[in-house]
Image (cartoon, rainbow, N blue to C red; front, side):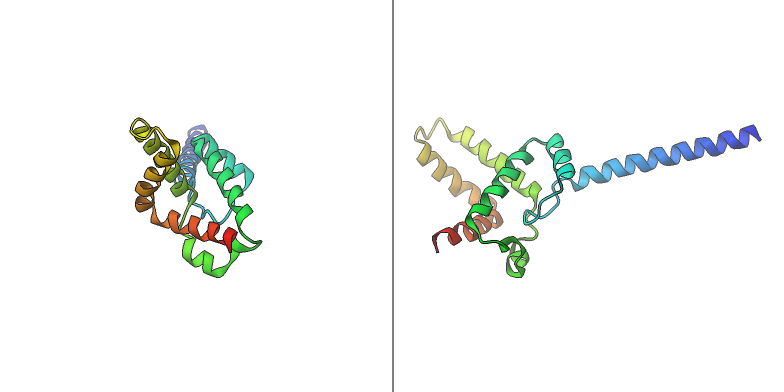
Length: 143
């Protein structure tokens, strides 16, 4: 009977351990997979930031975008259809790539305005969806 109880306890322990491992792997896969049109809850955002501090900058940029659009912009059907697949993780990749390009070409372009224009021309072809998204946001400011 003791052996049987021990076996059941060991089985339960192993099952819980495997479940915990699967849950942790699932969380890692899902980090940043939320559409940029939505906000993660604060706890989820903290997990993302712990995994990559760049999510904090993306959060600040997302907040900044709100200054250029009307209330409800991010919830509109048309906007949802166009940009729902643009995720937080894509924005992180974009920002990292942008920073890397700035560093790479900073010796060639001493003038920051010329450097930014050059890097913009490179990165916008790599990330056309982000280009369209920012154009949509900033055109509202000037209409």
